[in-house]
Each structure stands twice: as structure tokens, then as C-alpha cells.
Amino acid sequence: MIAFDALSTFVVAVVQREAAGDRAGTTGHRLMHINELPEPTYRNVRELVGLLVGRNGASRFDDGLRLMLAGIEAKSAQRDAAPPREQ
Image (cartoon, rainbow, N blue to C red; front, top):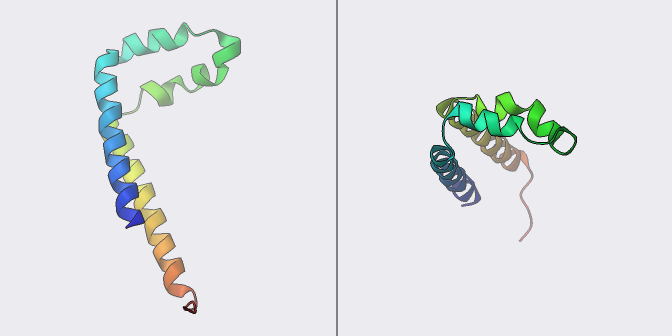
């Protein structure tokens, strides 16, 4: 049940992010605003601007989904390999 909750939460978060991105305007518009952030306070954000703005949403979803599924698979294999717990 935890795996289902994690996957469904991931999907909802991606949809919310896409909806927020649509309201935020074009990539160029968002890039302009990020570059206007003060350097000392937002240095990391400015350095990661390409990752924050430039990636394709479908590619980001696919990468995240693969990561989630790999984690679920690893946890399942770990659980299967563990000795049975006493009740």
C-alpha cells in the first residue's frame, strides 16, 4: 500500500507542477525572473537554472517514475530476502 501511495502522490505532484508551470509563463519568462534573483541569497538557484527551467516535463516524469519503481523493486527484493519475522 505504501508503494501505491508514493506513486499516486508522485503523479499528483507532477500534474500540480505542470499546472503551476503553465501559469508561470514561458520558459524564457521564468528564466528572466530567476536571473533577477539576488546572487548572494539565491546563488544555488541561479546555478541550477538549467535544471529548474530547461528540462522537458515528460522526460522529468519518466526519470522520476523510473527512480520510484527502482526503489520499490529494491525494497521488495530486500523484504523477500529477509528472514521471516516472528509474530
